Amino acid sequence: MPGFRGRFGGLLGCAVAATLLCVAGLVAADGATGASADRSASQAERGATAAVGSVPAPHLVHARSGPLARARSKLVEFDTAPFPYDGLVPRTNRPFLDVVENGRRGHRTGAGRVYWADETYHDRQVLLHLPKGFDIRRPSLLIVFFHGHGAKLADDVYLRQQVPAQITSSGVNAALIAPQLAFNAADSSAGKFWEPGAFARFLGEAAQHLARLHGDPRSVRSFASMPVVIVAYSGGYVATAWSVHHGGLGKRLQGVVLFDALYGELDTFADWVTKQNTAFFVSTYTRSTEARNVQLQKVLADRHVPFTTALEPKLLPGNVAFLPAPKDADHRGFLTYAWVDDPLKDLLARLRGYGRR
Image (cartoon, rainbow, N blue to C red; front, side):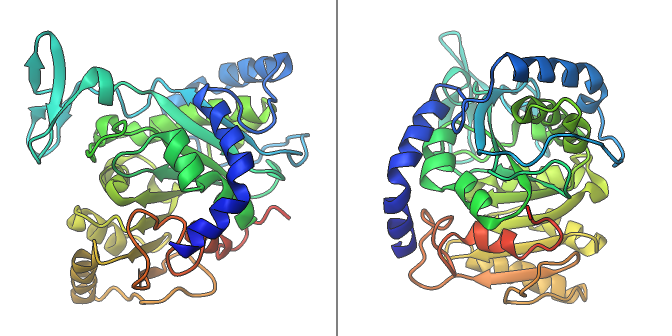
């Protein structure tokens, strides 16, 4: 992973300090969460109660605040987070928590391993990030990131995979929302995101927390109606598929990006790509998911859905692309080295109309 090593060395000092703050559940970049931000958030929450239950129609918002002087990151507990989850597993209608032992409840994965609810499916935290220069007055995006197996938000999404840093360096006027899925476990379960409309409710709550982080109470309405791009790495494909299937976003969903994540749900992704032409779809892969990517290409070809096997300079609505990675790219380091160093940065930089300047 040459790209990861080179970039990681230059950012290690500041990233470690920021991550330590993240682990503590504090603002990671500029500490801007004083009484003023709390007052703003309180007003924002009162004005956006409906945002948790529905996705409001886009509308103009007049905010006085200018671009952020510093990046802001924070771990926040959500009521609508994917976990804890005590419902059913779709298609099987079996209880998710299907193991009881000595008073503990757990879930048995398809591979036969048991994970306990109080260790693996208890974390309500969501990583939020606003880049330096983020301007609520300009066209903006929400980037929702679903991590893979064995992940912790601060250690992996923030530090190792550098997701907030890549969003910042892309120049895109975007906010990051990254929920904790199964905590440090080899499990792709989607939790509450299996439920119809749950993803939209989650984003409604995210709008409130982002307004608190941003500091302008009027920004909640902008956050609640921003277009959404879902980015999934590895095991994050399940949460992505169900959010696409019946998450409740409709045309607000502007794109899906899979980073070596097509391990299943081919029918779900094929149906979504086939039925819509207002969002883009990109799947980039190593040998880990090559066979399934080839299979999905065949399905789309049979349905006469055009796609490319290279990235266009501009990523536009309706674009469908499959991008094999170089042979020296490996699965674990795929978020920091794929066809280029920092591939998420490269993809987001191809979007048009969402620049911070």
